[in-house]
Image (cartoon, rainbow over all chains, first blue to last red; front, side):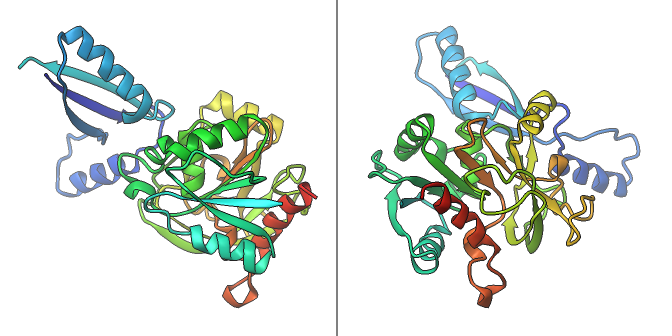
Length: 81
Length: 229
């Protein structure tokens, strides 16, 4: 099963990359742009019996390694295969 | 006392740290390999600067799980002294041996320059050879040195004296201009609540000889030596 994991900076954490990109997009003329957040996208392939098992495993992976929960939030979607 | 300096894949300043300890401070210092759990009876473990595991995922995120870290965590829990320099500081935060986290510099650029840090708490094993208010001239070389911690945690740390070093001007004043990376409250180094674990972004091992620009780094090593005398 494939899982798409999204890791983003927590609200309130300075995101200088997001700000830099926002600034550049404004310079390119995208005046309707009001904000940019930059995160990570990680794709996992797991051999597991059920989506429930996969969710439990991936949660542990996120909590232990993939995200630093002091400064990041994570979410994921299980892609049925 | 006996020192141990850990080498992770991608560590850079391990040999410079061993040089500073052995050749300049005259200390017994051994190298510790990331795959070994045994700390071999050292009194102080140093996690050196560098780019362990390529800084992949997050700086220090994977080094935190190296076999040696199980030994370091146990050692720290028992009151052993642990010093984390730059990447070492990042690893200690990832391992939750220190509060908070180090994030990308506000300017987004890698900063390599000499800075002044002010000693905020001289009552720790890492600063006892100094006085509160003392200024140290140390080099920084990092892309991810912006220290953050949840506001409530930061308040507790400030009250307890866990903020040990702050970036300051040559006159000791705090200002945005004197804060090279945007760290919250200009934090440059912190200790845990038991004051046996200390992490700092500047490199003391690169300021132990006048020939390369100054010896203020030696004062941190001297403090640790004094604490174990």
